[in-house]
Each structure stands twice: as C-alpha cells, then as structure tokens.
Length: 135
Image (tube, rainbow, N blue to C red; front, side, top):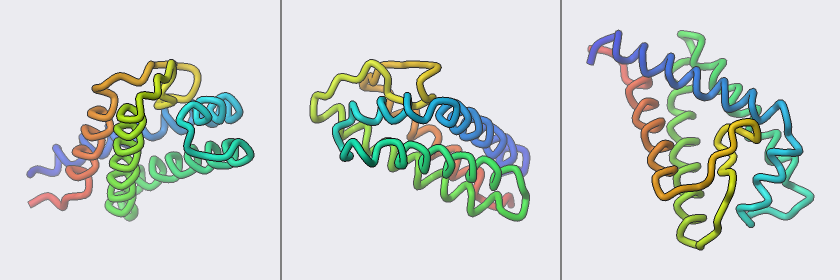
C-alpha cells in the first residue's frame, strides 16, 4: 500500500469525522432528540451522550490531522465506525423506523435504510487504510 492511499484515506476520514462532529455540536438538543428514537438510553442521558459522541468524533478528526496521532485516531475511528454499524444493524433488526439516523446530526436528516450500516463499514475500511503504515 502506498503512502498516497493511506493519506487519502486519512484525509477523507478526517473530513467525515469533522463534518459529522460539527453538525452534531451545532444542535446537541436536536441530536439528543434523534438519539431518543433508537430507544437505547434513558432520556436524561440523551444530551450528555450526544455531546460526548460529537466531542469524540471531533477529537478523532483532530487526531487524524496530526501525523503523530493519526494512527491511534484512525484506530479510534475504526472502533467508532464499527460500533455505529452494530447499533444501526440492531436498530434495523428491532424494526425501529427512524426518519433521521443522526449520522450528520439534524441538519442533513437521512432516514435509516438497510444500507446505512454499510456506510459505517466503508468508514471502518478507510480507517484500516489510514492506520496502516505504508510499505
């Protein structure tokens, strides 16, 4: 694998994580309302969980921007992306219909579809590419 492929994956991942974090941070209460639809957390914890998720995504984006921290940040992005995919699959399996999956906060509302988890799996693949040391 070349350095160009690794860097391209890192920059794409950085962009996605930065955009999703900022979109969520712009309306934490709105994102908490989206999280309510997953029926996973008690209502009093929705806003703190939403804020934490957005800040973790932002920290990953910042980590991807720095050469010294890009590998651990890419591995964190891998874990986060796989975790999101699992939650989405479970939500689909439970038959919960979501008008907004919350992937990009409340400003780019997208319904949860059967292929939505695949998007997170693609991000996980990018994270693997970004974490690999070029030959």
